[in-house]
Image 1 (cartoon, rainbow, N blue to C red):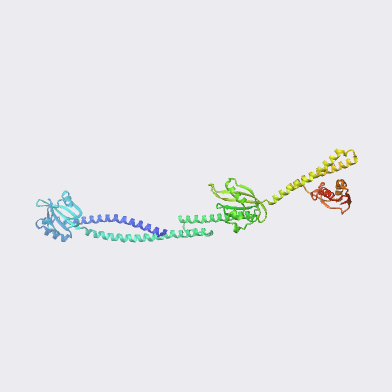
Image 2: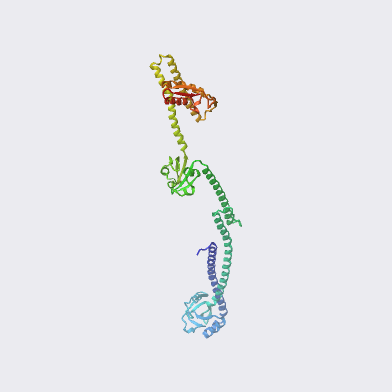
Length: 508
């Protein structure tokens, strides 16, 4: 059976009071018994003193005298000679009684003036209170007068004392238990309120408060619980705010974030991770990363993060539902003792960067081709001049002009590369200006015409609308359209593609 604090308090106080009353009762019983015996001895001593003048008649009358005196004193009367012989007795025939010289009270009286004892009588077979005193000599003989009363007469008063004490003890115990009940209820009532308060706090009822009804320890405990609840409420509010802030940060992050617990299950992911991995939060939570994403690269990255102290990074390529390249960084979470708690994975979409990198590589190839064209032309015309072109000054001058134009074109290409770099770095501002396309074509035709004439193709210049808007800034026509260089390549290719003896129109 489960005892409450009230029951334990009442039982403990009741047992303590009962034990205390028992000790007090035993002590008082001993004292009362001794006091009653002393009163009985004093009464017997007084009666002996009154009978001292009559004891001389006991010698001739014997037992008759003893019985007559016993009827008057309500006590057993015995007269004993100095040698211990019994001369008279009120209860037994003195002639048949044994020598009483060794009886404690008689021996004490013969040794002094008087003696007393409480003992069992072998003559009458019961407990008696004895008092004996030496009487004046009669005819030269020492006599001892002894009176005795049953212990039961003394016990009657003792029993009355015991009844009174038990009544008082019972009343005291009942009053003490009643006071204990009131006191315990005064304590347990606030304790029950505190239990209900604690359960309410555990269920999230942070606004409740306990009334402070006293200034004792219970009052201090109540104030401490109220203060604790207020601190807990403030702490939970702060944690909720921090949680909302963390959720807001996670939801606004462009990078995907996943948290995998110690059991290799997804416990948290933000919307960016859902979008990057094409997941739904409801189905992904509780799954392993391999079940959710089906990517061995991702699985290997998480495994490497657990094995390495500083985490791990890798690129993850996803083919479904569309090709996507992700840069992933994973770090293992460990507590202060070094125990593994989980893994945090951050993902960033680098698909566009990969495409730009591929475009940059293609750009390098195209630039190489663009640079090779003027270099090839310069080298070709230079070799022609070195072979036999210097003899014909007119042809040599024409070749040198072509070499000069290609050199300028090569310089412009290099300047354009520098301009592109400056544009990427934000150091260059482009300006729009109208430019005539005819001027561009006039610079292209001298380069095309020699190769076209070599195949007997005639080039003619046709006019077109002027004022074409292109980007111009220090001659940067080729930044928007390949301009003269692109047209040059186009016309050169067109010239090579034309059949012999045909006409190649050039609009400008």
